[in-house]
Amino acid sequence: MADADKFFFNKIVAGGGTWCCAYDPETKRQNSEWVGEKLKLQGPRIKTILIFFFNSQGVMHKEFVPEGKTINAGFYKGVMDRLLKRIRRVLPTAFCSRDFVLLHDNAPAHKAASFCQFLTPQNVTTIYHPPYSPVLSPPDCFLFPKLKMKLKGLHFADVAEIQEAVIDKLKKVQKEEFLAAFQKLYDRAKACIYVTGAYF
Image (cartoon, rainbow, N blue to C red):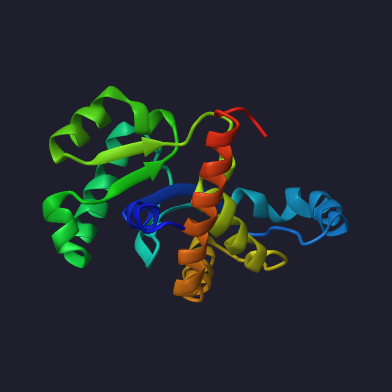
């Protein structure tokens, strides 16, 4: 990675959200067995949404969506407010100069007018994933698959157990892995530019 490119990619704070369930089978056989039992155990109904932001150095902010809450523009404004407060604490120089870039997807809550009106006065530079380009989403192609692989085959009785396990697994992600994720983002972005944004 060239020095100028490395400098830019080190400014990125990437974020996204994912469901974490009470049970995710390791194999197709386990899945078929679970389907036969799920009406009795109702495990698939026990789940929680993780929202996670990170940069090339590691975790920036994480939280779980409270049960019954919808991720709409109003809720996401609260998430962003908490993220910005976290950036101000851990990256005070970058926060004061707004020398960081927010990378997240094109979810309706992220593009809503009320959310954009909230973010504009904050002077936060935002970039969105191009349509049909999941490989340009560090959470979706690095963090969330890694997390879910570690949770496969485990059973959790309730949301609190799921969240405890998720936090435990996240703590074990090494700093070098976050850095590598942004190196891969750089390589994939170059490939996307080479094909002029076409799907591949």
